[in-house]
Length: 365
Image (tube, rainbow, N blue to C red; front, side):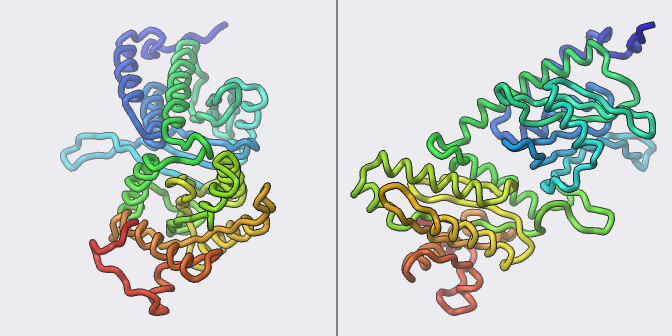
């Protein structure tokens, strides 16, 4: 006998459709990809009657690289009333993904269709693929005590299709056409999110039982990266080769930075990177590895190229443009000292190379 959905299911509750249309309208008014991902979870969770939903992103090698969890819980007010509290938790360390989830996502990827897995507590772990073109690029995951009914399945698929199509359009608008890196507008959006996270970390990241936060580091570092003597490449070999060099450098950087690092083309031959690292030494290792990779590569026609890097810690008490200005000062100091170097702001201050800038005194380009 086929199990029928309960009367409260949105198979039979037509009043949910106007609500859904309203949520889709809000979804497609968003202009930021990460906020869009969060909105997807906030939309589908209540519609499915579940408190916890998750979105997993995968890279080109099908490895899970980023996770967003959306939690809803009831809070009892002093007057006895109830209200729902929502919390977004971002986990950038794929090693935290449970094996039950990784095996489920692997089945979804191989079949390119929704799959479910029964858990030990008789709940079902249910997953749907997120499509990027013809490829699976992520997964929508939730747990529930019953299977998905046909009407629910239709709505989930429809919402995910709208989300994926709109996400692709939004992502293209935030990327540099040549390198595929995020552009300056995306950098400004990242500033807003990152400084909110730094100022209120408990609102974004959940703590592990032993008190350590998820992710590769508790601090963020911003670097400005510039290709040395790039003008000579354009002058001596033309802009077509210059574009080829920019593309090669960007691909070498993308392959050398970690999948969780954020990379932007800031303009011309200049790039910005935002990474997480526990301390300045760990951050320097990341940036030095990138510098050495570029130095070791043999480029067409020009053979050898180098890059200079200036970086500074992202501080919630300092405006983003001032942090960018600090990294930029370090970059130009590296240029003045012979190029092919990696300098950090506080170290140069400690060495007396230049004085620490006061609030509002950042030198910008």
